[in-house]
Length: 396
Image (cartoon, rainbow, N blue to C red; front, side, top):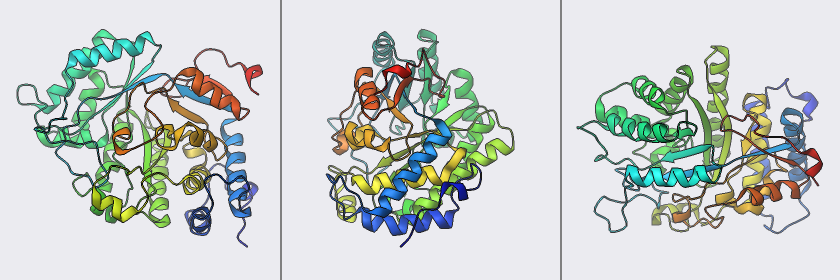
């Protein structure tokens, strides 16, 4: 029977070798797919993986579970691309297409700040009409400038690598020029979204119009070199294989190694696993995948293997309560996660695809979930600095 390698055998902080991580996934995924979502007694292999990931998390980051008070703003659903999994994008002429004005975005930001938000997360569709005096970059600059002028204290976590590529293409700039300009204007960090799976054969099927793997890596690496921190993500549980999953994680590990080895002023702050939700996805994707909601145990197994593989290179791991529901995300705290994400206040991309986890949670909800598994909650900044006091005596 396959056994999970003892943590004592892992290279110090480097995580599992790719071959070992792949062996675990290939052995555990078929088992996980047969387990009932309501099961309480797991097969030995899954228990071993869970226990090792939990121990690894404990050694690397301890018992504190963090969260951020933030607001998510998807400022337009008008998008030129046609990703196979996306239920969010609309043509500009669609009756339910929208494009928020700067005034509306400022009102939403003010509401968030009044509720204690320290972060504004902002992403949108690729709207070719979003220009000022013929320039895409000027539009994004103006948007950032208005937000940061009104709310200089808010950390602006904005614009995916895909949006950077779009702006650069529209205006004929280099990626470095776009990133540097937006950073100087007020963008503080970048979401590591649009990664989906960093394997071009997969991307050719699920998002053929998106930037390719090498371009995503180039843009994220450029951001780190220019002092812009990023997150990292993976869209999982669709047509990708365990080999694809490990290849994706290997790219993230190498990006982090490069940032550290070259002394870049920024790097990856966290890893977020995003299980596929396809209740209302385009028909072809629904047929390819065959399940409309995330499968709990395969998602948790991948969560654990990601922790074991990435090691100390990316120590902060977050589940998606929007996709898994708060109960599923809370379970992920036993499988290697040490963060429960943000309050969000609103969310449109996943919810319109049929996610059942909701679009907003309060601080009390997040803290109660953290305490329910005997861990200590703590509010954090976007870049994982603790805010306020940590009350260990409040943990169950």
